[in-house]
Length: 261
Image 1 (spheres, helix red, strand yellow):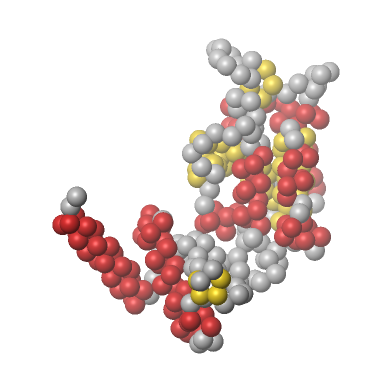
Image 2 (cartoon, rainbow, N blue to C red):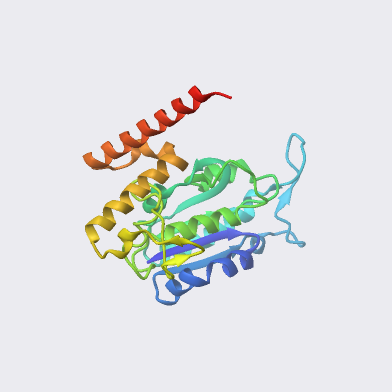
């Protein structure tokens, strides 16, 4: 079982977004738990303030360390009291390591994960030094808070937790499996707007279908995410297929240059 703990100023935001669909069913079946702890509940200010002006000046406000420390302490105490180990604490920040499928698989092996969602202009550096084990980003852009990145990561990680997906294999055989993008998918009808389902998928020949799917995955990865290919796990025949695709691309490019304007 995976236990998620989210430290946030907006618990209703993350709970309403995560406790539905596949994740909601996984929670009901006991594969996941998701708890949101309101950092504001640990403020000692009568107005429940959790932020203040930054030392040294500058725009915006910074989240204070003490409410976060106490919120985390309440979560850690509960985890340890239930006999589990001290958790990894992930801080959502565009400065962090970019999250990817390999990290989703790695994190899915944990029993507990704590997500710290910052707001305003960020979080006092001292609390990051004291409790955070991992700083992660979902991309090179800035959002108003860490809740959406945490939700994205929790969704991706949960798909790797045994029992969460109805089909045990479906979490693996999707985009980024073997560092390849997923092959095209089709369903009924056989023909739609003049476009037919490829004959191989209707053949019932499983080996040919698998070969077609792998080739299409290689084609898509080369077209859309060639940066993934150095880490792709390919058979010798698939490596030859990729080389031929690259050679064809070069020839087409050369042919286009010859024609000119």
